Structures are given as structure tokens and as C-alpha cells.
Amino acid sequence: MPGKVVILEPPAETLAVRLYLPLLAGMALTFRKFVANVLSRKARPTIEYPEERRDYSDRFRGRHILKAREDGTLKCVACYMCATACPADCIHIEAGEHPNLAYEKYPTVFEIDLLRCVMCGFCVDACPKDAIWMTKDYELSFFTRKDAVYGIPELTEKPSDTAPDGPGYGYRPYYGESPAKKAGQFEPSGLAILPMTLARNAAINRMPPPPPKPPAPAPAPAKPA
Ligand code: SF4
Ligand code: SF4
Image (cartoon, rainbow, N blue to C red; front, side):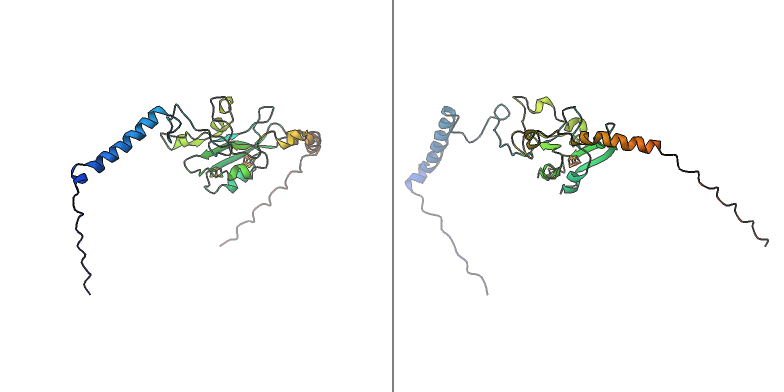
């Protein structure tokens, strides 16, 4: 069945349309907004970035930082919990034996590919050592893909992160003083068991070396053809 054709007639041109009055009304509105914006900065919905910056929430999820203990070593014990929880699979960790036995493990490589990261904060939630936080730094731009992979030097927290003109802390496990510190606990918990670990290592070193392996049996003589 053929469709019904509806012919629409343009509205009749009024005198106001002929005199461009609707156009002038639109220009008057634009001019009113312009004057209001010039006279009152508060009325403006926009800001003059980068001179002006918005104050984001303390739960803002920006660039990550790796937190350090009081002795300057990274709190991270390379447990892979954050890498396991990461939905974007963008955390790469390689673990090494820490020279301080109390800490046992530490990351020899800790990389986050910020081009793959979706800033979900799951890594922060998953960390059992309070070792990875996020900042309010959202100015992440890179010229090459390689630049977007942040390693330990880029991720380690720096004084500029919390300087007055710095981004400040964002998403983190707690806001305010660490509950562990508040409770008077010694944060590097491994230190408490250090004497025991040292005694265990000394005992292992006192053990006699394993007996040498018996010589391999001589190969059977080849049968005559
Ligand atoms: S914020 Fe989310 S996506 Fe980014 S590294 Fe952490 S867990 Fe992965
Ligand atoms: S940052 Fe935390 S969760 Fe990730 S490897 Fe280090 S200690 Fe484990």
C-alpha cells in the first residue's frame, strides 16, 4: 500500500519574521549571557583551565602512587593482589627477595600501563599492605605508548604529590590517620618476626650440605648386531 504523502506548508511569514526580530531576540540572549559572564565570574559554568582548577573529591581516582615505609622502602611486598584484581590487566609485577629479611619480598618491577587503566581503584582496595593509593592527578597525557607505562620511579610517592600546589591524595583505603598507626602498631609488621627469621636462617646455614649424588650407572655395553 503506498504511503500517505503529507505536504507541509511553511508558516506564513509574519511582519516580525520579515524584520528579523526572532534573530535579534536570540542575539540579545547571547549578549545578556556574555555581559553576565564578564561581570560575574561565579555565574560562569566553565573555568579557565589550567590557571583555574576544580577542587575534586578526596575519593577522586587519578594517577597511582606507591607508598613507602618510614625507612624509605616501598610498602609493596609484591603479593600480586592488585594485579589479580585489576580488570584491565594493566599491572605488571616481578618479585624479588628483599635485602631486609623482615620484608621478605619486594617488587623489582612494578608497572602500570596508564593507557589501559580504567581508574577503577580496585588495586587500592585489593592491597593488603596499604601500599598503593591514588592521587587527584588527572593530567595524564603521553606522546608515546611507552611513556604511558609508569614504573617504580614514576609511581613512588614524591613530596610534590602533596605539596600545596600538587594534586593531593585521592582514592585510598582510609581518610585521615592510618588505623594501624592510631592503634600504636608498628607498621612494618615483618620486623617483629625478624629475630625468628634470622634464627631460622642461621639454623639452615648450620645444616650439613646434602650428600653428593651417587654416580650415574655406566651405560650398558651395546649388543653385537
Ligand atoms: S585503577 Fe583499576 S584498572 Fe587501573 S590499575 Fe588499578 S585495578 Fe587496574
Ligand atoms: S601494591 Fe599491594 S596488592 Fe599490589 S603487589 Fe604490592 S602489596 Fe600486593
